[in-house]
Length: 269
Ligand SMILES: [Zn+2]
Image 1 (cartoon, rainbow, N blue to C red):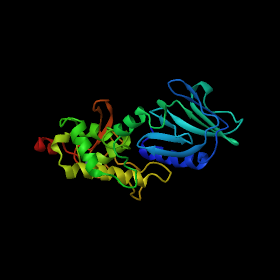
Image 2: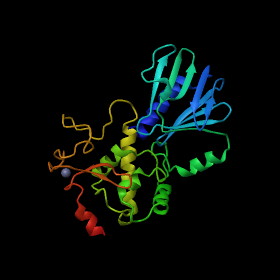
Image 3: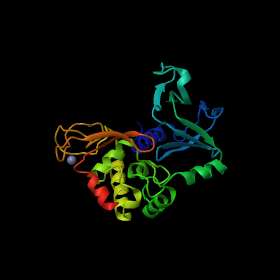
Image 4: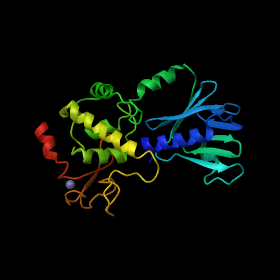
């Protein structure tokens, strides 16, 4: 599933391929089909898990890949790996065509449009931006969700900070020794900011390509600490890891009952 790091890598790649180029052909399946031919790509960038392509008329194409979306690059005339009817966006420049399949959301935003401003408000600071406003993250966390919200839902809430997906959620909680169901109201600002700093560090270290890594130990035990390792021994304490679908969207969550004790949660309650 694409997380913030994946989308940033994708944006860097597409910026290289499309930046400054005019579209010989282009179509986007937004609320209605939009013809993009003739527009020049000014910039490609990511904010959290959203990918933005800015055109020379200052319109902005926003894409969210969701669980099933992906971008492919082909030579013009080359057979595509997925059926044409699954193409959400097709951008042709020179000898290359870039196709986004099965995007969850595609939207063309007009320059200075109301939606564009609403969207900017709706997304929390991007954890992969060069500078991150931690005070703003805190403020958004404390004001946008209830104090009883479990930390796992806080981390996934892109309105608070954007970039953390389901894999990093479990990894950050493990590395911070936080039980997934500890409530926001039970966490001091320092603990909360530490979790976001940890997420930022992991995301940044994963923007250079290759498989996603949160554990850099020089052994064969694994690239991740807990994600996808339910019922296997904890790589720190050897206790069997737990797995459950937790939070408001019942997403897979992995944790160690020793390294992330529930007792800590109760003591704080
Ligand atoms: Zn452990």
